Image 1 (cartoon, rainbow, N blue to C red):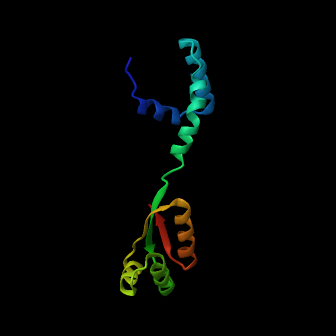
Image 2: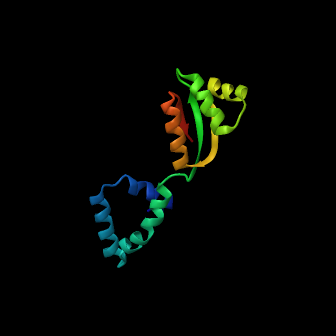
Image 3: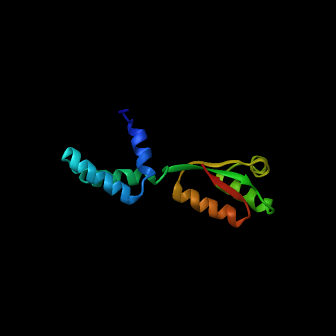
Length: 122
């Protein structure tokens, strides 16, 4: 029998239904005499923290939209850049803020979208 890597095993688990996972746990109890659900319960908080996503993101202006002047003002307020640099970002897109928390990034995104811009969080 071929040996599975940890990544292959986890990938297979992601594709299973809850019923299939329960059957797998029951089979592991029977075969090895060990209750893997006790280990899974202890590991669940760690897995949840990993799945939340990155703690910091870059706020990237994809498009200024129709109200470019308002977007240029926002870029200047957020970055402290001069008028020419802010206009270049509004015209061509680019990073508005780097390594900000996801909460702050969502607040910035809301402000830009209110002005008609399209923002991406990367």
